[in-house]
Amino acid sequence: MMRLAYEQSPVEAAWAAFDAARIRLHAMYDFAVEEADTMAGSADRCKLAIEVWRLQKEFEALLAADTGPESAA
Image (cartoon, rainbow, N blue to C red; front, side, top):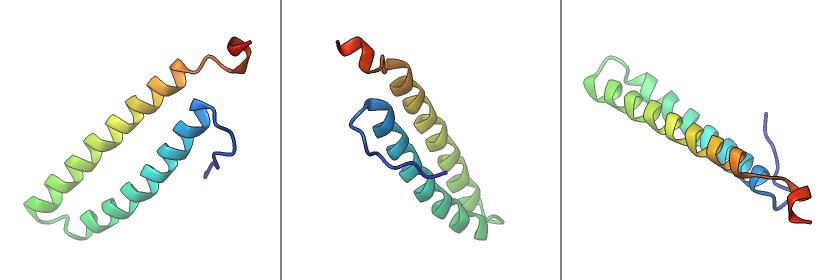
């Protein structure tokens, strides 16, 4: 699901960044699968998996840090 960042909240910004990264990683993974029978292809898929994990942790940190608009008042 694509989310558009129409607000300036940290959560909306995190969703927008996560979705953009997901699309880029999907395209990169599709290319890596074509070379799946090579050592380089396997290494590329491992790098992509690590990047997905890093992005997920970054997203979780942004989500946990958002206290919502009610805390600003």
